[in-house]
Image (cartoon, rainbow, N blue to C red; front, side, top):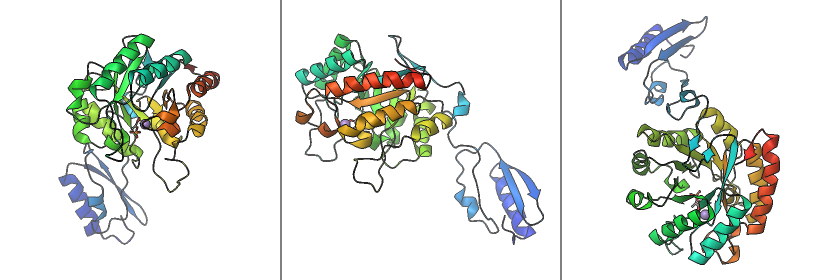
Length: 335
Ligand code: PEP
Ligand code: MN
């Protein structure tokens, strides 16, 4: 309460808190009164209180997300797959592949190269969220079929982006992990539907999303009963234009502290530049990432999407060698 708050104003605030279900603990100091409100109202909007007469400031102590918060599972979540792969355990999992599935030849050449270098999950978009409606929109179900076939041929799990609810049943048989893109991080209807699915979901941070917003989006999926959520930092929008996005490496240790969910880094979208992908991938592993999501293309100059940020297979293979050295320095290994 403000120093100038009257006893009447203090009583009005207490009454207000009690009426909405809080238990109030009052601490009367020499100059100021502090009111502690204890209760289970996680949906409470603190701005309503800030407007009451005599109130100086209001701070939320407990996080508004419950299932995604670290205290829900302090030991951390490990997402386990039938082939024995684990995301969130000691091994750092590398997911790699093209931005988009473009053709059988392109996908298989890229998949073979990334598998050989040590990728455990094949990435590739079949439905693409493009900024322009005139850009390549993806191969759809044909692309998913190719993803499944390439994943099986080269011994990798498969991840691909789901853009809307109607695609979920179509994609289910082809995928091991659903990817929710940055643009859909707050597509709450889609998140709710993915809460009903029993397959892991990799949820990317929106381009201007706060950590709290990211974790509340994870909460949407988890509150539906799907606890296998993997988070991903993929760069945020800042004033800097040199890179496509600003890769927020600090998101990795921060999310690892706030949440028990595994954390992925996508340095490809995080920088938008091929020459900056490896340094940011190395930094992400050093910062504690549980997984990396990296765009690789067999011929980046011919790519139909995100060619400039796609690694050549040789660059990817070199990067794998580097992170195999970095991981042990932070008590990890590459899965
Ligand atoms: C992608 O992974 O190709 C993609 C579109 O990512 P984002 O949603 O992070 O832009
Ligand atoms: Mn891409």
